[in-house]
Image (cartoon, rainbow, N blue to C red; front, side, top):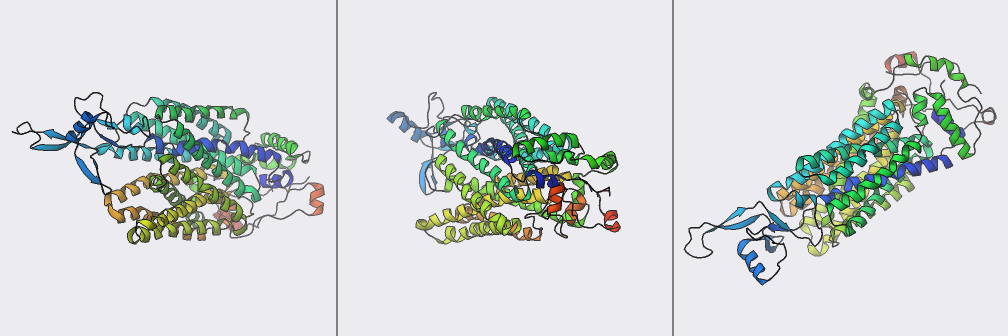
Length: 580
């Protein structure tokens, strides 16, 4: 039976000094990922604005003098918005030219030039490229295209990582993310902006998913949750850093450069991050894997057998004859197909709810946009604390289901406070929405760990990437659901997005109950392992004294019948048992 990396980890240690150092290094790009995913809140912000007065070259949003104020009142119509009389943002008076008295027979028409309130932002992409009025939907489209890039990048980087290795895929994504982020500063029109945003979405997806996969593959079963959640914690740290930097930098060009240039630091990872030894062993590159494993053993101060892979010559020689896993194998059996579809749906929903609620940060009633955004980021820390504290006790399945249902029910309950409670009780709406965000953030952290443990090693990177791609579908849908509520209008329009988010969250949580538990289980290596996972116990036991002394790896696996082998797309060929 072939030696697996989980066997090695029982000698190496599940979370020694080497793994702690490597996980920390892999978590750092999560900061830039959080920034890149949320920077659109500031780049695409639309400040208060009105039409520019024709012929007034130095027109500004704020009145410069009494004469300027009178000219604004005579030129810009007033409309009722949010119960208040305010200047129209998109229309201007035009005299017909046939009137016999001043101000008579004027018509209201749209305008092509605007002036913006600069009390919050000096400039944004929306102000420079005029994503306002009839073109306001372009801001939503640009966010959808960014998520489309993430969709493509998560899937492509996953397939690339399974093909050429995690390290090479990670480095390519870091390179593209650095270049794309810097060049974005010079986008002069909508087409150029969305192309570069698509590239940024593709590359940041590759960086995050690849770092996550390497981190998950280097640690043992008991530390996967902690590792997976810590990656998410660094995402939240990125959000809080972004809120602080954006508070002091109000020009989008300077903000984009300030956030993009530091990504170049991670180019040194080529000399810092090793290839995943689990992937190398799965590719039968045992000599390369052994170099990394022995380096880890040295740092962990653990002694390994002198000839770790000595008895695997026969199987290495015949590995080319074995079919390898590919993405299509996820759908070759009913068991894998149903599990995969449930996982994809949970990724889609948790992302839709997470980003949908984040888009409502302006409605928290806490004052400035920057403070509101900071609060949305801070609520994620208790969510991750709950995940770390409970998921190893309750299990992945129960914890994920509970957080999705709690968050979903909280969102659904807002319909009662919005429709039937007076203004003095609207703080309850905010509280329920924040509980919904907490549930979504916790569910996001858990589904990363849960799904990566369910997928076999031969396709883990590509399958995790595909799952993350479906999350981006949810991210693409979310802004349109929010806009749908604005289109409906009124109190029900405010409640509609939350009602949709909550209903889908509850449904996803209930479907997750059909998945097998992965707590303290060895990761499935082949497609056959994945099919049997949760149906029969797989090898996971403590070594006896004789095995400890002889240094034997634990290879207790379920018995496989000839009929099972014929039905499975991939299975291990029998070989001589491994001995010390």
